[in-house]
Length: 68
Image (cartoon, rainbow, N blue to C red):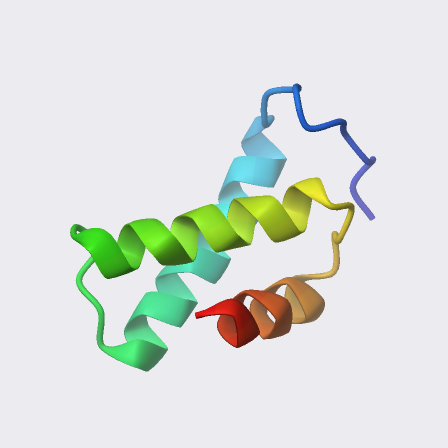
């Protein structure tokens, strides 16, 4: 499990890999291009969920999907 970080902190390489992989999976599932407003909304939701303390990949996907 990854250590929790506060909202103000930067993401390390492991965290970036996790978030990127989840982002790409959600985009593929939804047929959304990686550029554009919908992709930006998904990315913002994913980061928000992560910053709230969620670190489990399945839970991150589920909560991000439910917001978009």
